[in-house]
Image 1 (cartoon, helix red, strand yellow):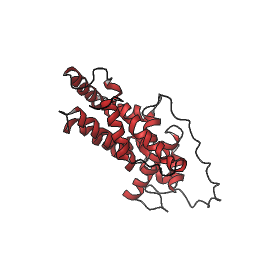
Image 2: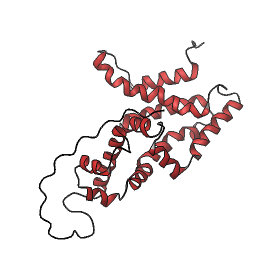
Image 3: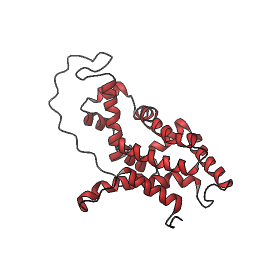
Image 4: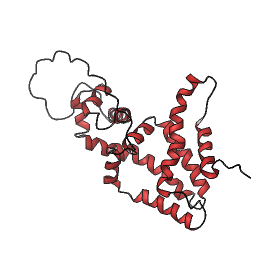
Length: 234
């Protein structure tokens, strides 16, 4: 899947005249900005939003620092390289979301319909609570050259993904789900039936007054399509 058309980062603001240097900066945290967990979290939030909007390859660390209102030296204090920043984002922000979504296969392993229903609901919850999730996944996981996907595979491998496929394949062998379903496409299919409409319907209110669909409405629609297709329920 090709990545969405790349947006251009806003041009940097003109730099003010630099002050005369009073000597080399001492090692440690740069002065002039608040530091600590709050600052670090703000930098992570900014990076996620910019990566989702413009793509990882087109978002230099300097743009993240500028958007967050800190100096490049302050960003460098927390994250020396883009790879280090990506690893922290994966470990602290992305992998916990993936683990939470994947729990549905452990908790409801004996009930495929419940698993699919909960999966759709958790995807909607994640996309609603974390606005960066839809754009980041479309650009950096489902696209041909997704840097985030490559980094996640390098860091965590494919065992979780393969376990999901194995579970679906076993259900097919037991006659519990449609044998024509392609296990490797189920997650992407549910994503397309839930998260994509959630993003699209945000602008519907402007075009069609009075038309509103909640996250629960979209999840119910997705589960109905996956469970029964367009055949009337008997």
